[in-house]
Image 1: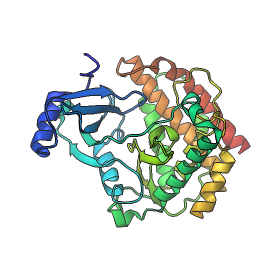
Image 2: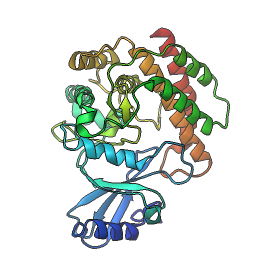
Image 3: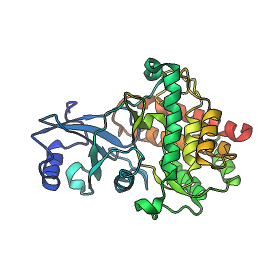
Image 4: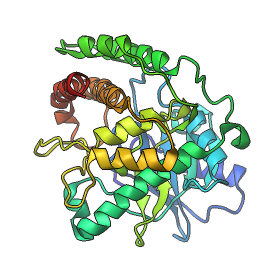
Length: 342
């Protein structure tokens, strides 16, 4: 297919749906392009003939789908709930669970102008001072998300906070088993060690589940315009988001890594600075942050292994998937080291 008709996106079917459900929204034929950078759900930018409006379509990957993952209803629900709050999210347009349209459930949201900073080179034009400011704003926005009262925005039943960490460990263990096709030294040891030392969770909040610089759009004024990729969001332990952000603030020192990290950028705050800012602004106890960071290494190792599995089946779309499998042992080792050394 041509770039304007990417796999997984039936533009004629999408146009017919939008004309039926949102009369007057679309003007003329649609064009669409896959937005590169995602490694799980597929994201497309769609424009009509007038080019006056732009939308984003999110759908699950083609082929192998892990149980409980890629839930379009959950993604659409959480951005719909958060849009009226001060948390920056795109405006939702519609949810479609009829698989006859695109071959899978999907949702449509408005396109938000902004820049996703994925690499050290991406941040270079900002310079150290602005880079530092963007990262601190990332922490502040996370605090803002965690301050939302789930009941007030209709998300009181969005998850089960009781036993959250134990269930997360079991869930990701099952996800690993669903994609286990090779020996991965240390991953079972890491999983068991995390289970032996579960921290006591603070009061629950809406958690993003994949919160990092790569998943927000930054405006020209360096403000965060939108938080994206809510596929792992739920109601649970907010420190899981912090642990992931800390994990992405550790330089991987891997050349040409397909996993986005900006930790080595000049001006990037240290993990300790990010943790301290979160603690001060949120008022939460962050003394167990090493456990949450090690859990983040484990979770990412499982996610990467799932993506590697889909790559071996020829079910991925985009570039860089051929190197994903080599990263999994690196993430496992970082997780073990974090637990051992704190």
